[in-house]
Length: 253
Image (cartoon, rainbow, N blue to C red; front, side, top):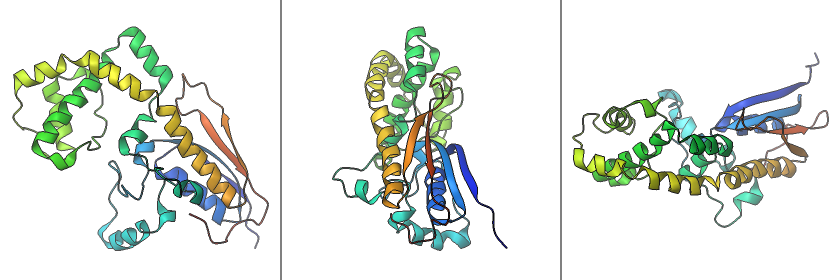
């Protein structure tokens, strides 16, 4: 019985889901095409960080198999291509990948309007100070997004953030120290704005790595800026089409 060919589509496929779709596209002869819009780059697995923050732990019985899979370069979300993997200094930190998720267009509007959302950056920087005081090894820990953080007091925000890095939510905080750091919000916003200028560079590297991976496996592809970035920050679609019957061969990392 013949199986019908089909197209894979990933709209804002989070973290490693995008790379998994691409690998399935290459390995399965019945997948003729793919359209992929990626997001959540900070949740991509790398050799340096095989289990980035935000991933759901595997069931206990699957734990050993998962660990074995993580040792294989082809199982990481970045880099996918052998070429990028061979470049000196190709590694991307959690912070770099997290920054690549932000939209320049949206952030420019926040700066222009002096939005209260900018407060979140100072909250996170202040929380980082207390995290490092308690657990220096948690430097730059991936604290997951606290919803509507700008509407919370810092104490409320800290309680939620500390719990996400396995620190006591009721950790005593020096009120004077907190106030002094929150007064530095303007400087924190300037620093974040400068870091954000590199976001398109990081995103481009991740997407080009995927194009090169497809090329290494005999498939041409294109990146198409399809959506208005003001409406959808992740507006670039990776599009690829392969010949019927292509697939099933050993994949390259």
